[in-house]
Image (tube, rainbow, N blue to C red; front, top):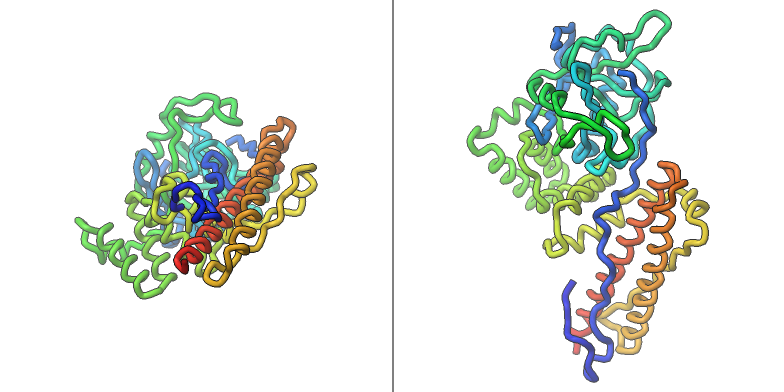
Length: 408
């Protein structure tokens, strides 16, 4: 936001209103059921399936999904991929000579919110062999959501048998098994909510996207990422948001660095196409990388307020005496007189003051030790929503103030 000199007798309205910056240490609401999974590159009969590029801190690997033999799990996995859900998640559970597990926790080991679980498909004839991709779950056979694991060894004890469902295999590593082995070889210990098996250092997924070999092959090898960025720019200039997202997916599949500029483009395009989940995922990444001086920062804050999911009604009961202030109207700086602008300023400043008190109250709720994971996630989401609303309101008033002063 623009800074101005302190108010003078000739400037009775005063300086632009400023709200507190969003808390980057507080993620958007994230929730997943706790897992208690007791968890060769052997050949398995399969048809050509969808391919996904997984980019990690230690290198890239390619997964081919068993779309025909595990249609529910493959479609479920691709939905998370297309949402950008897995970017920023970590491999939180690693057991040497067994498996590596990820897909449910971010870099702070906070859980992520998931879609509905899928029905077990472990009777599809696919086994938990080395290099296979399978769905993590609880003791409930039909509880698999976003978490997955990759077998480092043949683990046929995880396969189903007559009358006993196993763990559903729905894909296999086709390239990059050395990356899986490198993750599996890391030392482990306790961290975050886990008493053991967390690798040191944490290995995160930097991007995950569908892989289209034909598109990749059509681009120059030495300047593939440059060529894709040009395609993104052309699609953006042409106002083709769907094409923008398609090329951003191809860009992510190269495992190139995704900078704040691209993340804001991704979020804006996804929001324009009403793909709120992908927009929010891109913005979560954006706020981890961008500073408040980034050209699109204020717009990103405003966009986040529009794409973040509505807070569940249960939040009202959970936060107790924390009182959310009512958002005031902003005067139209193009036509408002000085009296209306001063009244508008006072209303906005009062709202921000009340908002700060609300955030302080929410912080006490968030820090309470007796909260469940769900309650903690809801409170964090409400905290972030309020910060975004305060930032957006302040920016709207400052825009109106600039319009008013331009008339003077």
